Length: 249
Image (cartoon, rainbow, N blue to C red; front, side, top):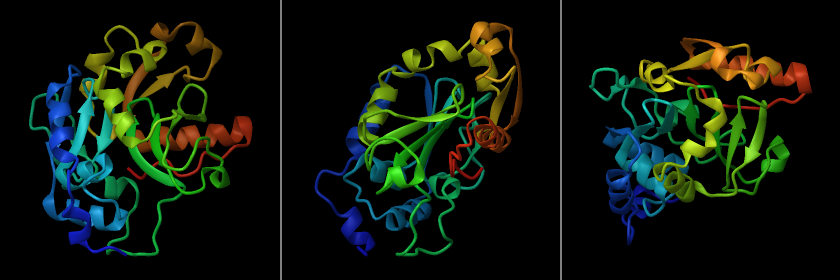
């Protein structure tokens, strides 16, 4: 197990470039300050260096809230992390909390099937694949980002790693990705949520009714954990497929 100095004292750390990319992005966002102690502990548990974009996020950033609260990317947010702005996402959990890191660094610990790196307000989940995604029923290669789609209740491979995924998000990639899952006024609805809430959509997004007319669905704010539990229950009920761990909120 590498010590903290080996992980932080690297040539060409990712954060300066990542920070510049965040600043230049045309996507609406809030970038939360990180908790230095939690950032170091997270990096040590992950055993990734500050040269990677994942390591740069974990060490230096409390998380990023994109598209008026629609998408949350996790970092080293302290307890009750808040943008501090009216209507901004509050109470954003950390990468360590979402992935149930052990209280103390444990060299034997590994995330369950992969590392949850982001959620959207519909209960979509972005995961960085672990060493053997096939063993946990997920597509893609090790180190690839996969997405649990709330309109199909299945995992989808995105064929990119963490850094390319972040670059795609920051270059307005969500506009096309969520084109069929957004409705007039979605920004106002997602922007009113806290970092632990999502939007419950009825009829469900995977239903024929919602697919025919998303605009007529009813939506309300609920704990995001409630939506994730619902998705897992219906994936098991409808397809007899367990999507596995999707984050602890």
